[in-house]
Image (cartoon, rainbow, N blue to C red; front, side, top):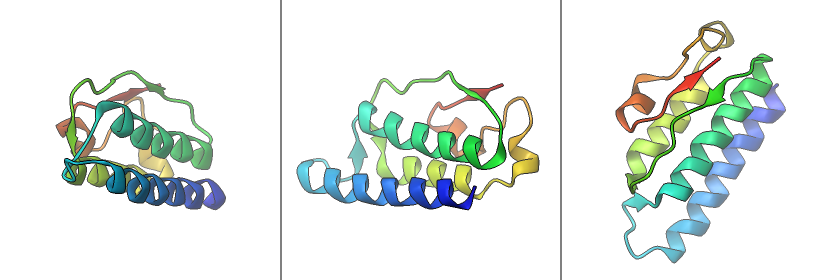
Length: 102
């Protein structure tokens, strides 16, 4: 459980550093990057909590880095009791258009 969380954090950090160096618009992720980061965090949280949620919202437009990072952190900091509900989507993720359902 803890291992999945650490893996997700490391993945987020490595992707963030790698992608930041190759982007001319340093304050935004393209949709593919944002979706990968959010999906990795939510998969790690599902693994940690023993739950299964469907990632049913795909970002189609560039997203501000700060908003995506807030979403990822909010997912990873959600306790398993709160994550086990039908729609555990943190408010910071709803702000950028992300939603999960079980």
